[in-house]
Image (tube, rainbow, N blue to C red; front, side, top):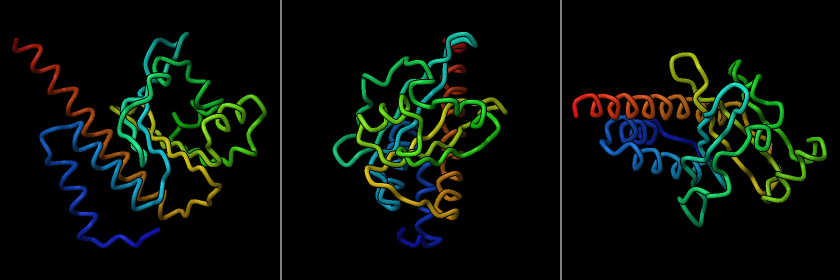
Length: 176
């Protein structure tokens, strides 16, 4: 990991919190995290649906090739992406797994998308889980606690920005 200066952290936090365009600010933040931490794919997934049919959709994605979300990762059952991890993430746990250690059906999915290490960090709005940030590495890696702490901090800020943007949209609907 490249060491981050206080100035670099302040700059990206300022951009995230002061940028009027929510999508642009989040995309720039994901790109910053992807580059500084050498992440192959970084995504934000939103959880939706009802209790009987919990779905996830990729709403942001940053790779070296693209910022476009993957249309195949929309409205999919949550167990496809986070096998048995939902309850752990609802309790605030970060999932950090080497794909080779996952059970066969789960391992097969992640191997098919060229992922050797997967990390998921839950995102909360008003104490309920909104979604999660996913870090996919093509090579196995050991994440340092300080790296995950910084990424968790940015995940919380992104969740706050998404919530603020949602409230702004709701207010605009009420005023129209």
